[in-house]
Amino acid sequence: MQNTDTTKYIVHAKIRADGVVERPDVVGAIFGQTEGLLGNDLDLRDLQKTGRIGRIEVNIKSTAGKSNGIIDIPSSLDKAETAILAASLETIDRIGPCMANIEIIKVEDIRAAKRKHIVDRAKHILTEMFDENVPESQEITDEVKQSIRVEEMTYYGKDNIPCGPNVMDSDAIIVVEGRADVLNLLRYGIKNAIAVGGTNVPPAVAELCKKKNVTAFTDGDRGGELIIKELLQITDIDFIARAPDGKGVEELVQKEIVRSLRQKIPIEQAKERYQIGGNRQRTSSQQPLRRQERREVRPRVVKAPTVQPHVIERPHRGSRRDESVKTVATEFKEHMDELSGTLSGRLLDDNKKVIQEVTVKDLANTIKDVDSKVKSVVFDGVITQRLVDIASEKEIKDIIGAKIGNVTKAPANLRIASTGQL
Image (cartoon, rainbow, N blue to C red; front, side):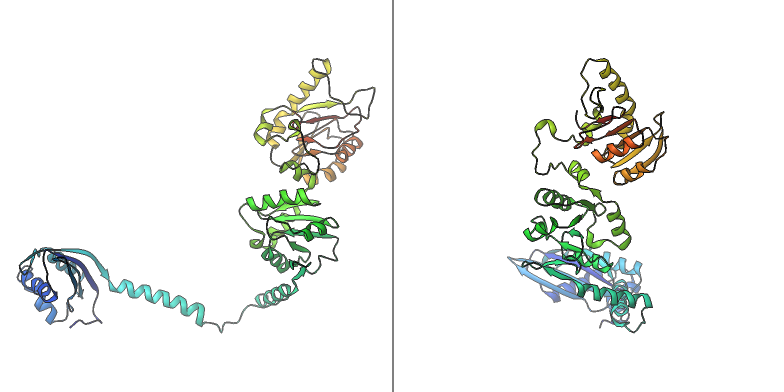
């Protein structure tokens, strides 16, 4: 009989016979053909009598005159002795009158299986049965706050669009993708978020955006970019914020949410970045350049003529002024190449040395506070009339961006350059 308490290994083998054989034939062949083969110490009959070898299990079937099956032999011998015993089975070449073949499949370590069971069971006991631990005070506070904020979620319009409780009363709202995003923002005390439910923006949300100061806060993936493009086309939004690349808004912790919202970009920058022209259709010559194309062209400087100091005018090619423009453009080309695609800007002195680097969204406020050392502004964004006016007040000589927006007036002593016009 097999002693299950002492079994260490189980030898698994498969058997094939060229004829019809049954279990007693196989067991008899195993005992008969291994007898005396390995000496008295490893004789199968003696090992089974002393309990060091368990009951030999044979499961065999016959089909179309052929027999195939599995042999299992429990062993409490050590590794080396069990391996020798297993190898001896492969010497059996006949079972009754039939030619046969036995092949060892594997030797299973019963103790390893028991250890795995112990580990799995211990994990279950640890996670499911130890529920009497007292949580930390902060954990209790966070749990209560989270449950309250989840209960605070409301629904907007006849379509029951998930939103925070302050959406209707707040002057500014945050547009996110789904219900889970609204819940995550509520978890950290942001109560003015509303979901659009994917790329098909509900009409109710589009109408609401026209009445509010809107920040679109989307996932850092392709789907988030598509939602931004749709929002830019069908409604009015003021800022764009994105989660870090590969992350969803619902996954962010408080620090990541705050950082993403602080790094939001204004709508003018978003239209340039995502190649959206609003309600005005661009001609082919007005299409924004891709990042690689921007790196290959020089910025063109547009200098106002002295006869009309408040109107921007392109220099005539071939003139002396055009030659001067090319020289200035060459000086700023290195800065423009390095800034391309970064949404950052640089404040330069008379020698084109960097005094300060800032993000595009902070550029206007930074220029207001600069001293007289700043003579040039180079940035990866859209030159607006507001930036031109501020630069003029600070007596800045050059302002160069990726594109010129709706700028109609500029002083004669301010030169404006754009790579997006080339």
